[in-house]
Amino acid sequence: MAANFDDERLRSMDREVIPGMPQTSPADEFNAQLVQNVHPPAWTNPVPDGRYHLVVIGAGTAGLVAAAGAAGLGAKVALIERELMGGDCLNVGCVPSKGVLAAARAAAAVRDVGSFGVRVPAGATVDFAAVMERMRRLRSRISLNDSAERFRKLGVDVYFGQARFHDSSSVDVDGCRLQFKKAVIATGARASAPPIPGLDGIPYLTNETLFSLSERPERLGVVGASPIGCEMAQAFANLGSEVLLIETESGILPREDRDAAAIVQRALERDGVQIFCCGKNLQVSSDGRIHLSFDSPERHYEEAVDQLLVSVGRAPNVEDLNLSAVGVEFDRKGVRVNSRLQTTNPRIYAAGDVCSSYQFTHAADFMARIVVQNALFLARKKVEALVIPWCTYTSPELAHVGLNEQQAHERGVRIDTFIQEFSDVDRAILSGEDEGFVKVHVKHGTDRIVGATIVARDAGDLISEVALAMTHGLGLAKIGSTIHPYPTRAEAIRKLGDKFNRTRLTPRVKSWFARWLRWTR
Image 1: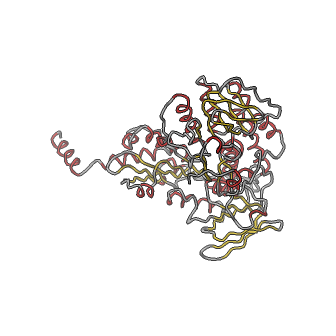
Image 2: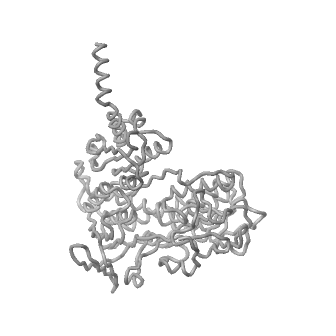
Image 3: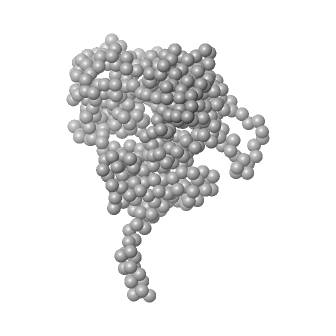
């Protein structure tokens, strides 16, 4: 869709689950410190002094990287944030979720430690309130990196308030008008909910409210087998909740390699998550508890839960910016940009979740770097050149980069696929975590990597080696010739290099070697 939408029409497309500032409850010392760092109550906005080289709207990952990068290069920069600096990642996304996941994995390790010959006294329990307090404490510590004071010291003028474009060279915030040469829209996206009958009438959770819990739900329903849905379903199961995961696709993590997703699904089920595949006709109601009514291919279900997490859907934060006044086109997917991240107004750029289908912190980071180069230094960097890996942090993790088999087929790219099972990797065997694999696709007849999937412990770390190779044109043969420490899980990737090199030993080459060896005997 190329047409613009006015603010009211855009709001009607989805339910905004949390108006205004993200949740910072409970009101403890750690949340107080978080707010003090990323939206100081006593903060006084600076007085504009001349035109800015760059005005950045939104202080999530993309906005912070753009502002810091531009200021570090000597530009005069303004950064505007209406809520909490750090955006979703710090406040309601990557940081709190990984804090909870770490505690859940510790609980699972205690549960399973007997298989290693370690005996734990009976009666070990999870203190859920302490788990969440730990997360808030660590989040407040990390928030120093995204704090208003830190960015002020970097030379960035930090403004709090709602930004609204006045024209193509100025933006209004908190009664001030900021003049700019270039601007960046980095306002991110928020949780939205699908049109589930009855959902409007119940107090459900999203990632924006989940981490405010201080009491563990005895029974948790999760709608949507997205990465956050799968991660939190497994985490809460390991922390002691009974978890029901309802997905409407043919399987969990529908964007991922199906063999890898199947391994993650088995892991979730082993940890106690009840997965209802192809849940259709979902309806919800409440009478103190939340009641779920839905169908699967086999039967009809009526289930009751104490809390419901909805992990389906995102909506771009574009309303109230007055984008129509400056000719910036947008739709329900976000702001329209070209390959250089320019909007339909060439003086205004966008980066991060507000304009990208890759809604990852690291993608927003590198998009912001492209914007700084293109907006300030007349570079012609293209977002398509980025090699973007991603990871779902379940146990085991599922990481991916580049094309999968289906995408390669759809694009007409002929591939050869090499697979290394972790059941044949010594470190994985010794760690008792030998389920999973590395799967690498190369362009047919070559060692040029076009995509890879890893499902294993620490897959998110392992995929970086493949992403590095893809980014810099290093083929699978080069990985095979690189010495890896033994024993490590990364040896699985090197083994694939060996497998590729063995394909080069054709019958003809082998016969030449045999002749040489006979001659030199």
